[in-house]
Length: 231
Image (cartoon, rainbow, N blue to C red; front, top):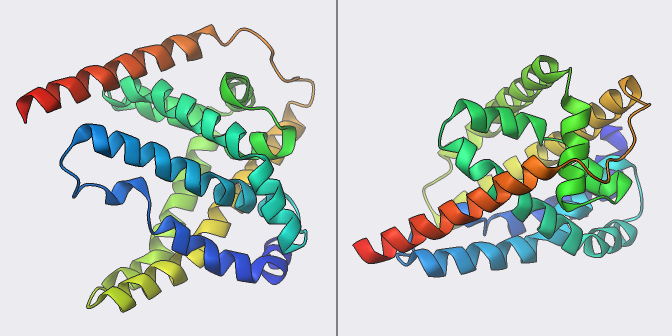
């Protein structure tokens, strides 16, 4: 439960947000799209163990060293899954509503990677199968947790008078919000899994995920090329 995660992982939950402070969203000061892309890939790889470890902490209480070890063991699985998901939703996201649809369908990737050790397109198909038939319920729950997270972190957004206070606000708000998000996804995963306990992990039939990912990669390359030429 939430209390166990905070009680047993409190040190980790305070250190983890500091790593998130170097998220890809803070790379807008870099002018070169190519360097931005390489930086995003590097930061994704460096933060992956901590994302996976926090997902493992949400799945059940365990010692700090075991949580970190679990996170590092899932690093490559999460990197491959995250990049595959990013490419798959890139093209639909340009059309807004299809992007929202794909984001909801793929919202359970982290608990699937942690609990079932499935990654890449297999995890994407598994998430889609679990959400199918419960899309509206999943969407409402996701909107609810996002609103709650925004409400919790809003007071800390005003701490922007200096680097130290900004960093403190980021760490405090993330130490509260990040565990809530991961625990929520874990509980949502468990509920949907109980509802559809007869669904097994798919080993095929995820062709459209591959097609979307290929289209997304092509779109990213074309956009990067166009921006480079414009500069």
